[in-house]
Image (cartoon, rainbow, N blue to C red):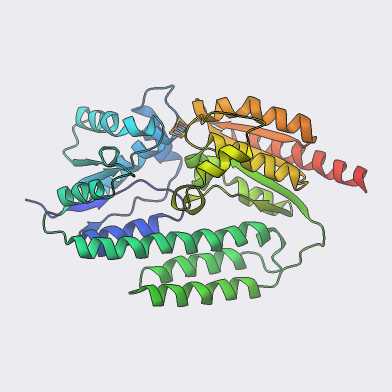
Length: 355
Ligand code: SF4
């Protein structure tokens, strides 16, 4: 039997803790998917149903490229919307294309029953030690929290860096250093060190910068390629960007009950995936007098389509502009930049008017 070489689709910087989990916890070789490019999206789209949402196409492109890179065991994410059904469809498409790989579908496991994840991991490595995977998992979850905290500070300040690229370089060094940690103590020390270095980087931040909050659907908001590196474009315009939606805030700290209470004047029922979080954060950004909000989602994302009408009510009530982006495999870069520049001009003029 060939040696197991596992892979999991890209999702921003989370590829670092994911690789750590499989190599250190599950004890198997890991093939990091090649960086997402136009080719990833093109091959993913070529073999996907046309109207399926973009994460399906990106994940399929990732799978094909990792098989080409040597992976023979693909792990599917599972998920809180139709993402949970994608695994079976991906598997069928890959089989029809003639790929002979093993598929581990995490949709079969349940967040309310962590032991169910263990049985999925066992199917990858039958010699797996429960003690070892549990210890590594707690370390990996902490790692995710440190990455999220680092990136949150970064997106709020990178637009004011004095030396171009200084934030990005430190970010890459920080991510690289995480692969070498051996314990919670080391993780905490390394994260503190890099956070301190990050805060020491020289910035030229105005007293009252333009502030934009980003909300939207899990994949599109967290995988920079899929939103055309929007946070970078906003930083280049000198905007402080806030984005609450990440793995720590939504899945690890699980604030769903509080969210329903916060937004009771706007929505009564959970519409699924990130919809309630988008509404909650839009309301918070509006109450904190942000200059604008950007909503990002994949074309055809039903939970976020449901949220959009509610977001428009918040926009009207609080007089805060919201720019909506819906991405698919055909989205034009020029169109995105033009709309972002128009949005920027508009929020600058509004700020001037309010002086
Ligand atoms: S949240 Fe939306 S875009 Fe993401 S997988 Fe679900 S339906 Fe698709």
